[in-house]
Image 1 (cartoon, rainbow, N blue to C red):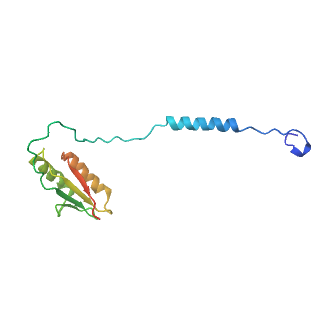
Image 2 (cartoon, rainbow, N blue to C red; image 1 turned 90 degrees about the vertical axis):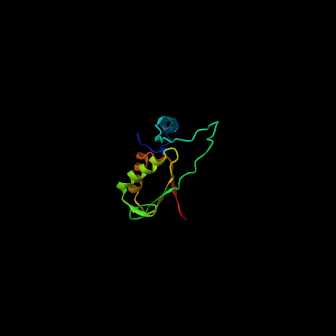
Length: 138
């Protein structure tokens, strides 16, 4: 009988699973090492060290305060502004002095939609604004 119990006194053959487990662990390690790592590069322009600093540093202009409330309304220095007009306003700030731009301080309500912030950041990039900061009020 092929399925005889061990009570009959005959030898019982068990399958040795140790080599199978070893092979599976080796395959798991191989797949973990060779799996591509998902990464998204972000280009950041960091300031570079210079041996000769500027002689007469300019006083930075006052920052531009940009606030996005919960409803998605954008405020440019506490005055409501449509998102479509931001690009022209940002370009005007950059054109005043491209080497000494004001800082764009963005204050976003926690309940605001990300889409509005994404549009504002895209327009700031299109306007070539270099100094962008996020403000978090306690």
